[in-house]
Length: 523
Image 1 (cartoon, rainbow, N blue to C red):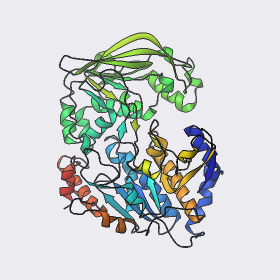
Image 2 (cartoon, helix red, strand yellow):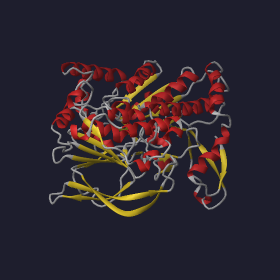
Image 3 (spheres, rainbow, N blue to C red):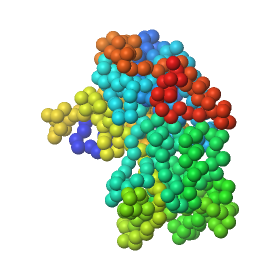
Image 4 (cartoon, one colour):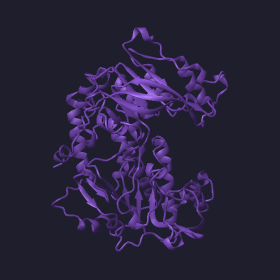
């Protein structure tokens, strides 16, 4: 356990203050740890029993790193859904199957006799849609040497503008993506795409561009992917012909990447409205390579001319949403924006300097809010003494994934010692915030896995578990008559059934979109 001084430090400084524990660069840190698989350390041949909460990329990559570095590590992975893989299954665009290739690596991890999948079981959390088994966090902590929080970001950020919650037809990107990807809680979203011809997507990240592509793509081109049949039916009836992708900043600050922009540029029978050239530097050729290539794609635009296509899209920059307008019967029909001014328009890190007072209203028969996902604290965090930053939606940690403890109440206004929480770690979006792609999540998870290995080998304190009994001991506290626990072999039955359903419609799989269907498939 590491301790360090703190006197009214901000969150960023708090994490930096903990970093001296691992002062060497990440590259040498990794090289130094590679010997741990063959070097027993102070604990001899004893291996840890680790609970991982969440079965997405962060959870699996963290587990794989620890299992590789400390032989015979036992991993019990808890997942609230009956099925694994998190946003790899429910968040990746259906027409990006190559992104899901990481599942092959996850299958290898799950094949280990030291790995146990425990699906349909939530830790300390029971949302309204959840009908599985809930286990209190305190109960979990009694049975493991270490717990890794890798449960991702299940909520979404809001704009906080008038009529956002009152009008129908305004969706979050998380809901919309979950809907076409078969996430059970969003299966009945039923977005109405028939009320008008113009859609507004607020936000300019890759998820926003994915949503736009789903709206504009010829539905017949989507049928070969694992998008749900109910989503295909809705999209086939869509009247949307114009999609605005709106951001508060300019093209030089945009979060989307070149791959997603190119995919929209080459859609059949879809054209692109040219960007405002004054928002681009005069000499694009002098920009750094990645940013230069992205700007060149925007300037080049689409080969299709606007007058020759029925559908089109645009990137609308420097607009901040201020209000939604609605119809008398309560549906959204317009979005009002205010023009923004940037502090340094051609600098990638430029921020919004001010609002200019110029109002712009865009017709909006449907609106998708794509301004980010958000993690929330699990019930039991406060009681356990786990620091969670509600504003940023992350667990406080030391920069390497070690969870931090709050100060003693009697010392809150004094100079005090802050410590990491023995045996508690975090990885993925609940650690970093909702940013990056699967590769960056993998690298972050490796850092957390290495922190666990470092601590175990060097003899640091871990959780004061009663018996280190893992799921075998914890399962005795579960009412099996009221709760169906899904094991990996059960998931393989679900997987097989989905693939068989997909064959009937000529695609890889047809996902089950309800928990009951999933449970029935593995009986």
